[in-house]
Length: 610
Image 1: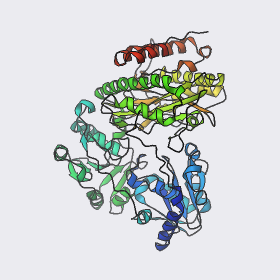
Image 2: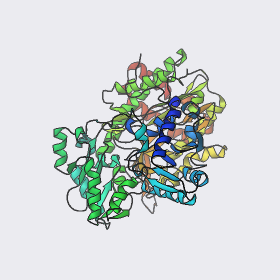
Image 3: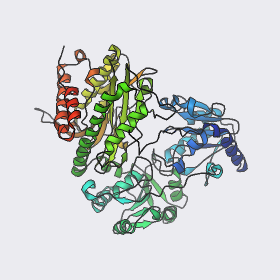
């Protein structure tokens, strides 16, 4: 009945091929006089979403998850993952080839100190590690009395004989009616920021920042409409944009050349070296910029000035046009999600599978005619699969959704006017008292964050406790951040702000984040309630001595009231939920068919205190 166009359910793991590929890599390393090599899940741009041509870790290990790193020595190989990915490892990797370590409990640097032999030469690609990351590796090798050896050409590429070609998706303009600010005006703001620094140029290494600055979008990586490109913004003069010229149509190139020098990718390394030879001071972000970029400047006589990319906070604070676009995208997306929820309630008893649900939800989004892509592969976990935070259903793992289970579905859409991200947890049949209790505790935390009023300059770390407090009181917690920044037709995960235990960036008016506390019982079920929220000026507080901010909830789709235990809610919390559902009814009614509208009226009926 439905079909997914933007996501696949094939099991892409190549576990059986790991042993011969590792053998080939070891032979290549021996030829080069290397005793080991580090293989991260990264490309030259250091962004989380990597095109198939750069998925070296997945090709070598079979690891199909979105994070990880491997170290291959002559006599052993190890893969480092986080808790979220450990669950899938039995299916993904060959345990006869790789051992597994937890990236936090025994990080790669500590493992290197304890396992790399003295005087060993451990190779790495400076293009695939950040400046700070390479420094950490160097310190670990020094502690092991080993040598960290940079390589110009990656040995994995030498043995990857069927490597896909790099992406060549067309670069398209991001229209001013969505961007809200011209590139010229953005450059003026950026130059004003650079005037405060003692630098001659800024390297822009994050494709999200490049795409935002030049008002362009692309299709180089799945689900994130960025252009894989670098830029150098000089303190005076025109900036330079480095991109595969085959991606540029004549009109787009002409528009870009009005404001920038448009150059081929190969010119980037040459121009970095020229900055070095001219003894220029070049600013870059050591936490996100590839070490190779810094090397090209320093080894040619230039100076690296470390500092965060000033574009990042500019991009995170949305302008009035972007905020209006986000609200419009949320209404459109909320209608699609609501149609899905109504359909699911009608069809769940027929033995739907997780893939059925994913395909249906994507189809409802596509029906708007404005969906460009999903913003990430949909997480659709029934029963125990819902307890896997980053679960991705495949044909092999697909399971039927059974009565008595919870079904967690986390999804989003990419629209030209905004990026969305929403999670709903659905009761399939009567929920147990334990499910209702845990769901209500999660809801209480969600509401506490949604209703927060806080001084301007407050960080996400200072607010994170609000979402966890009721779970903590019950002796439980969740092992992920409470919220992440969201881009404007860009990445669904955007810095610098986040709501998490270590979220140190200040939340500023105009930032859009997620509000997504959860609870996960391994082997049983998962719960998450996620809405997107906008940082706004708080309503007038009598006697306030400093500026105050608050959140506006942007997402509009019903929360499953069947999972709510009203007796656990305060009057204010119940009022928030009822008011939220009343707003959902009001804003969505006109865009729904009669059957869905009738379902929505029932689903959002006011709850009362018992």
